[in-house]
Every structure is written in structure tokens, then in C-alpha cells.
Image (cartoon, rainbow, N blue to C red; front, side, top):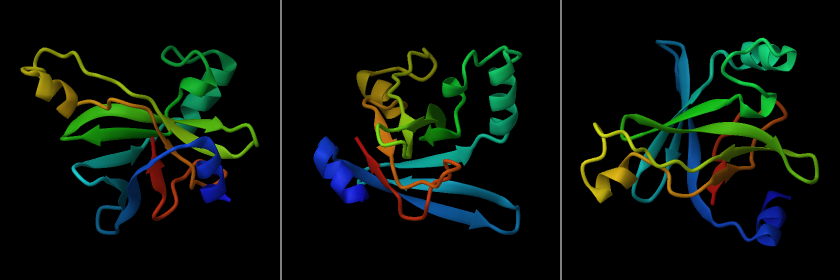
Length: 142
């Protein structure tokens, strides 16, 4: 089903997600593996609380539920984006990772550094469950 959806939409596979379980510290994270780089993807610990307060209008940061990130994405030790839960036209959940280019003067010294600490295109993850949790070996598309 996922492969058919991808072939119809024209998306390209960019990388793969590996779920890493650290039993000693009790912290799980996801490693996004690409040919030239890696992402570390952490769950937003306050996701469910933020969704509740955004629905009631009490949240000062998120004005709508669709802006609450499920995951935070780090690349080269810096936060570069977030994964936002969405529903496709068929009602299936997926994660949308918006692009973002950092303009922080401390990080950007050259044009190469500008792209080293940023995502230059939007990405998508379709292999997730109903609670927007990323499954093992989920593909990342752009």
C-alpha cells in the first residue's frame, strides 16, 4: 500500500529510520540514516499536554493542534526541524517535516555552513502507526 502511494505521488526515497532503544537510560530515539548525513529524531515529551492545551486555546506557543510537533529533528548537533502529524487525502496518518534554513549568525559562516545546519526541502514519513509513532525501517521521502 505504501509503495503504491509513493509511486502515484512521485516522491523519492531519501533515507531510512532506525529505532534505537537505550535500556540503561530508558531513552529511545530514532536515527534517520541518509547516504551523506544522519539525523537524530527525539520524541516531544510534552506532545499530548500541548495538544490538550492547544485544543482549549490555553497554549501560548501553539495556536492550533496542527502546529504541535510530535518529534524534534537534530542534524550535526543542532535542531534543524520538527515532524508535524498530518492526515493524507485517504485519512492515513503521516509525518510532515518542513524545510528550514537557519540564519543564526553564530552558526552561519559560509554558504556551506548555511546548508550544513538546515533542511533544504520538505520530507515525509508514511510508515507510522495511528498514534504517529515511527515504525522500524520507515522510509523518509522528499
